[in-house]
Image (cartoon, rainbow, N blue to C red; front, side):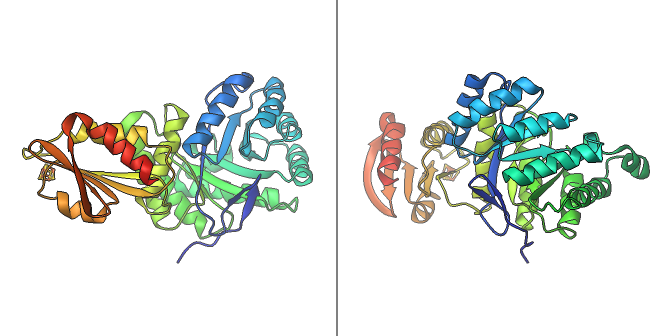
Length: 349
Ligand code: SF4
């Protein structure tokens, strides 16, 4: 059964309530460097990001936020820690959502002021619980940042904010441990119907980071838990968006863009499948039309995959066969394969 959640509006983006999973990321520029931040936000949007979070460290960042907001067309989320004045200033600068870790804003009156400002300005709140910053009493009770500890903190903070008659809430419970994160989201999804922001925090670099994120986020989404996702990589944030899109594509939660199917290669391989597939993938990332492109090393499994794909290329002894919609179109000389295939993909889009 799908876990039914409330719908929360962030700018013009709907999170939860059965709406498509929203992809988000976070800028890695200093927010006060508005031109660099605007450039990165535009790159993220082009890659398919729908919501961008920015770190707000001081009041100068909140001033830059106003300029950034005026020059970008994507809902912005201000990431706030410790200082409630920064939350108020970010809201005043036109942000669409704030991410708060209420565990580090201890004064209830200050929290009330933030929530009242959110109400007046239609700003949503993400309660961002993180294993690294749990409340002291919860940590003492559970001895470490377990799934149950994360859930207790999440539920406590939901109650705290609901006391101010505020319901535009999204919740995240993040840990760098995949099993703890999965368990925490499974538990909280049974106890709240607020939309869940899912991710593995500090997943790290390169392949390990991508694999941890994919396993954690993918497991939850396949259980129909999660309404918005952020892949956290120690890398260019655009890569976070590419990985997020691939996770959603692999679960068939979005039908968008080019899906490259490539054989693993073996001793029968007649073309450099790895190099061709990589170049085709890199150069067609921004195409939105859904299509399957199969790149196969030889005729063993080539014709079978070609029948299932929109466009297929099968390596032969001297040339490669181009097949579109299951029909042979022509043979392509090896030296023209990538150029020709990309052109055919663009024509198809
Ligand atoms: S399609 Fe051909 S080259 Fe590719 S793995 Fe299969 S047998 Fe090997």
